[in-house]
Image (cartoon, rainbow, N blue to C red; front, side):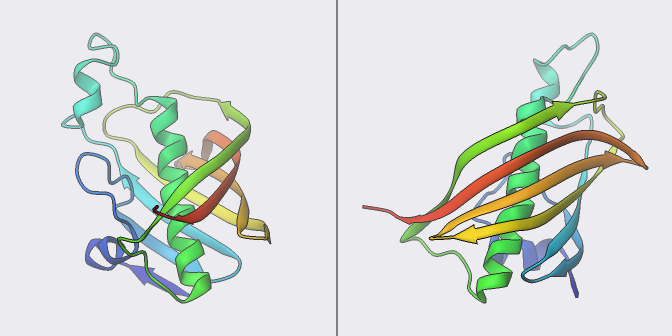
Length: 148
């Protein structure tokens, strides 16, 4: 089990501001699960246009945050880091449910578990929570592909 600060996260994700959506890894058990955090600030660029009168974090970005946590888990499981010759892609999203809006000041806890890895297709079960309340859940499928 390992935790990771932002400096370590930057070694495992190619994303950078404003698209880096994982701030800290609380726990990572390679081959099993990861628990990470995303601090949601009013300074996030999407709040300017996503209901300025009632700022809400877009659901697709919550799903993206779960996928970024899944990517870290995948690379930790493989014992490797991303490089500029490949990219980590979404292959599918199933059973996505948005149960409660996420607003500025919330802290998202991203819990992702590997459910299967077959022929380079990773399947995950993910939940995003604020406090103890599940706000989003989804099954994710991702893969690493060489850049042509």
